[in-house]
Length: 190
Image (tube, rainbow, N blue to C red; front, side, top):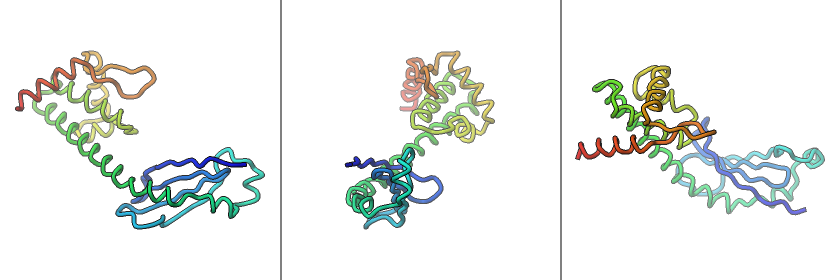
C-alpha cells in the first residue's frame, strides 16, 4: 500500500531552531535544524507513531521501508526556506510592537482619543490576523496598562465603530472609520 508523504513546517518555541515533519504511513518523522544557515541534513530526528496509526503497523516497529521513504532532499530544501520565514515573522513582530508602542504614546498624550482607538483597533486586528495566541496581554505590555484596561478600550473601539467583528473569528476587522483616522494621522506626519 502506497502512502502519500505529508509535509509540514513548525517553529518550535522551546528551542532555537525549527522542525520539519514528514508522515510516512503510520509514522511521523520530525527533523530539527538550529537557527542559522542550512548546510546539510537535520541535527536531530525523531520517529513516532502518527495520530490514528493502525496498531498493527505500530506494534511491528519502524521498518527500513519507512526510513528509505524519508524524503530528506525535500526536507533540506524546505529547511533552506525556513530562515526566511522566521525573518519575516520577526519583521512582523517588530512592526506590531512599534504599532502597539505608538498606541501607548497616543494614550499617554491624548487619553482614550479617537486616534488612540484607531491605532489600538488596527494593532489588535493585525495581531489577531498574524495568529498571535494572546494579543490582549501583548498589547497591555506594549501600552503599559493592565489587560483588563485594554479589553475595556477594545470594547469602546467596537462601540465607537473602530473595530468590527467577524463571526467565529478572534480579533476583529479594521473599519473604514479606522482606516480614515490612520490615513489622517499619516497625512499629518508628512
